[in-house]
Image (cartoon, rainbow, N blue to C red; front, side, top):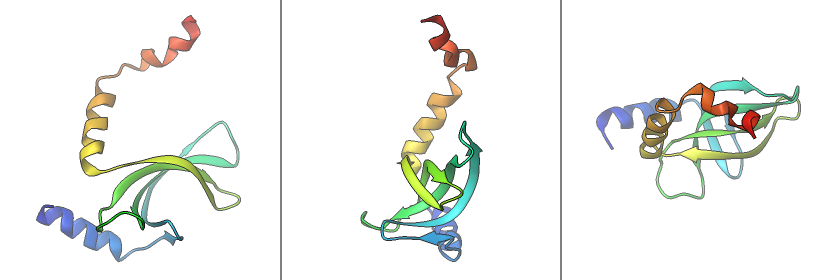
Length: 102
């Protein structure tokens, strides 16, 4: 882990937003609206309590705004996030319309 990564983690750890038995949320990056009034896709920085070490991961998961409840989601380590960024940058928005052709 680089010095910059350590500084960012130290800065995040000072600002716990939410904590439960599974995870610690350090920062909410964005709430992405969905088709539902209650649910959003929440993008956040988390630390999972069941994993070894103090690695902070980027987490994207469903979040119920009205009930303050989390649903299923996916987390990315720094390395996984770098790969995901590359994959997304190579996609074309028209590829999302593939279902209309079926």
